[in-house]
Amino acid sequence: MKEPLSAEEERASLETDALGREGKSSGAGRNKHSRTIGDRPPEEMAAEATGGGLGSVGGNGDAGGRVLGTFRNTYYDFPNERAFDGATTSLMNASCQPIATVPKAFYDAVCVQGSGSLARGGTVSFAKRDCACAEVCPRTGQKICFDALDKTSYPWGRGAAGTPITPLRSIAADTSVLPMNTVVYIPELDGAARSDGTPVDGCFVVEDRGLKVEGSHVDIFTGDPRETAMLNHKVPSNQGVTIIVDAPRCSRLRHP
Image (tube, rainbow, N blue to C red; front, top):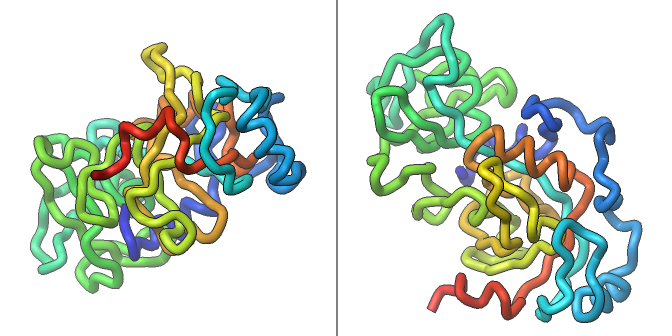
């Protein structure tokens, strides 16, 4: 993702509904297991985290760890050029050299999400904002240039630390609250089904950040609009999720 990518500025104010469309939060389709941010005291969540489940998708009776509280939740994904058509534009690099000619609609998506997949192969990720040679991103008003990346090394794009990000494993956070490489457990997402039917385990790693991912907010990388739709059906955007650190079940993800 893309620090300091203005994509987050826009995406943080958006939610994706159960059909994968972006729009302002309306509260429609709220899952019965979700809750409004701040409607339960941290001590109550802490008791549940170490004892009896949260009434969430998967529960977390044996999670252990330390409950930090309820954080705002949003999702972001990885546009594929093949899904777009229509009028074209040039995707530019930071030296103002063209990377590829792509549908304008693809640019409009990738300038918000920060990374995407080219139809010819390879990926692109945010390189520079206020890039004089680039098109204006309609949602942010910024002109974004990109880096062309090797798809083998960066199949899903690049995070703020310069390392590859992974769907349903990488999250963006305010690194003054959750430092880079912090491992977190989100019980509401434990057991949520992916589009292929396999479950999410609820364990994530902070590998990205964004200007508008601030304070108690996590932005979860889904990798695909279908995954965003599936998760949004179970745990809608902006409803709030419990953030637990030092959970033994996620210890395998900790950096040495």
